[in-house]
Every structure is written in structure tokens, then in C-alpha cells.
Image (cartoon, rainbow, N blue to C red; front, side, top):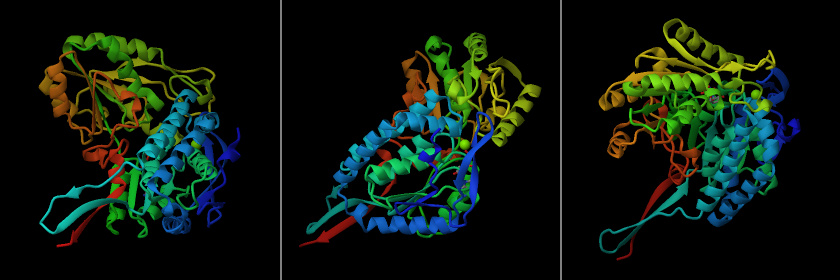
Length: 482
Ligand code: ADP
Ligand code: MG
């Protein structure tokens, strides 16, 4: 494994160096629990240097590029990412424990973001506004300036794509703080981008803990926008820290997203999604479809078919490329096990997969599980588990379905399965979520599709063209010329 590909340390102003403190963090392979290397543990001094470097980039080579030049450069970086697809996928499989197929899909998504936002960079424009005689008024979309990006460990490359790449496309200079559990592909990306010609300081990466590097970035007075993806609790802390400097925030937080199955649904089509939307990335997905709401008429049939499918699911090392890899860490696994303990005591287990026999004993494995007949207000139907644990909730009427679906503090994604077209559109209007999928779930991940939540799932939108509005600020120019 060529770890050196990604391990240089802190990347500031186009240079690699160790953390100012000289401290490091261990890099764990969750498939076997072994320490495979060490990471620079950046802190406040490193964040200061990174923010300074980003500020400097805005008034040097990076800031002088035209929108078209920025776009061309991002597209070029996208091709460089694809050229390194195997290495990046292996690195992510090692660091996050993702089955190789899923890690590879993340690389392809990152390349696609670079292509999409590369193409969009020179297509974002303002408006002219009819106003009083003698005036000409128009709006400009300008970059915020220095953007901070704090990202989690579950989909590092995809989140770099939708957040950092979108911010760069419209001319910001970025400081990225990857998660301490999974920083390798962020570091590798910085290296690939620099080699492909990204000017010094446009992208700076400060690995380190949330408490040190993350908190320093969130509360830094020198940043102009912060984008955070992670847990709802930390999201609230970030918003509070940013508020002290009146820095705008985009928060992509957790979810407890429903998949609603009506009696008249095409079950053959729905079943694979009911499973995959819950167990993808071992359930460590903010947009997981983790509550399955099933109308009574097909409840028994859906439960039986879920049981069969779950029994076939295998958890094992990333390299074995099975349905589920390990959980990211012993700590996360223990948190999921806390939920499972309650579930085993209070709920009915209707289906369970297996951890393969030769899975290394130091790895953090869990079988996929599905629990049935769960009451909508049960803890397992309300709280984000962030693991491969699905709950099935029966319902009677469309009104019940809407009430249950909307009955958590979250509102990220929702899926609806029915052959009744009127009902599909009614549901789309009534569900409280940032994305609603009709007779599908996730729409294959499309980078084109704006994504974000309401309520505890956060606010602001990333992905799609919409993200570019979030990473710019509108200036109104009014000229009086008589
Ligand atoms: P998860 O539960 O998915 O690990 P977290 O919200 O704990 O999500 O972490 C997401 C990101 O937020 C990580 O990069 C982490 O280091 C960072 N982080 C954690 N705590 C803080 C904090 N207090 N301030 C800033 N960033 C933080
Ligand atoms: Mg790791």
C-alpha cells in the first residue's frame, strides 16, 4: 500500500510540512484494527497559517484566473483524479474500511464533481434589475473569499467534491479540515490537484482533531464562510462558533430518512432500495433511508422479503468487497451496539446478515440487521444510528404515513413507493425533506441534484448548480447616470 501517496502532513500555501506542534495521530485500518501510519495533528497555529495562505491566494495567481481558466483547471484535476482511481480507491478502502467497489464509486463521483463544477465555473451570472429612470442596476455573484470546510470520515471524496470543489469553482480559496479517522484521500487529493496545476494557497489541508484543528477553523475570524458536514451536535457547535464572527454557515447534518412503501408499490423494484439505502457504507450515511414505513396490506410480505435479503448480506474486510465493510472505529461500533442492545430487548429482529468467518478479529464488524413492527416513537425509529440497522414501521393510511415520515426532528431525504401518480405528487409536497425520491431512492447520487436538509438535518444546499449560490455572495451595483 503506497501510503506515502497521502501522508505528507499539513498542506499550506502549496507546501507540505509537519504540524506546528510536531504532534501526530495514528491512522487506523478499520478492517483489522491495525495502526498503519501516522497523520500530522494540525492545530490552531496550522489553521492560522492555512487561512493566511488562502487569503494570499485570492490576491495572487489563483485570484487572477478567469472563471473559464478556473473551470478548465478543475476539469483537468478531474482527469488527474480518474487517472489515479485505483490508488485513491485502495487508499479509501484502507482508511475508511469501504468495500473497494464503494470506494471506487466515490472516486468517480469526485471526478464527476470536478467535471460538473469545472463546466459551471463560467456560467454563473447575476441579473440586471429594472429600476428608476436614470439608474442602471445589476447584481454580481462574488466569492465569499476564504472558505472553511470541515468534513466527516464517511464519504471524504464525495464531500470534497460537493463542498471544496464547488467553492473553488466560483473563486474562493479553501481550507479543508478532514476527519481524524479518514484524512488520507483528502491529502492525496491536495497532492493531485497541486500536480495538475492548482495554484499555491487555493486549497490548504489541515488534518487534525475536531477539538483542535476543527474548532480553530470554525471560530477563525479570518474565514468568510464555513461548510460543515457531520453530526447535528457538532453542527450546532460550529454554527455557534461561526456566529461570534458573523460567518455564514452551511450545515449538512444527520437524518432518519423514511422510505414509504404503499400497498400498490412495485415491490420487486422497491426491495433492493429498501435494503441498499440502509446498508450502503455499513449504514454510515447521513442520507441513509433508515426507516422503512410499510402499509399494512403488504407489511407481512415486505417483512418476509427483507428477512430473506438481510440473511444474504455479508460483512467483511474492505478488500473482500462484500456488501458491508467494517464500522469506522471501535467507538462508533460501540455506539451502534448500544442501539442494538435496546433493539434486541424491546423489538423483533426479523432479519440478520453475517460477518464472514475469516474477518480479522481486530476489525470493527457488525452484521446488517432489520427490526420489525417498530413503533414510530421508539428510540430506534427516532434517533440516527449510523450503522447497518433498519427499522420497519407499519402504517394504515396516507395521512398516517405523512405524520410518521415527518415525525422526527430530521428532514434530509425521503423516498415514496406507489403506483398511484396522484399520491406520489401529494407525498412529494407533504414530506418534510430536502430531497424526495419517487419510486427510487437516491437517484444514483447525481452530483447535479441539490442536497441538504431542514430541521436538525441542517440548512443550506450543496451539490448541483445551487451550491454555487451558497459559495458566493450577491453584490448589488446601482449606477446613477441621469
Ligand atoms: P461523525 O459523528 O460523523 O464523526 P462529527 O460531527 O463528530 O461526525 O465529525 C465531523 C467533523 O467535525 C470531523 O472532521 C471532526 O473532526 C469535526 N469536529 C468534531 N468536533 C468538532 C468541534 N468541536 N469543532 C469543529 N470541528 C469538529
Ligand atoms: Mg482510518
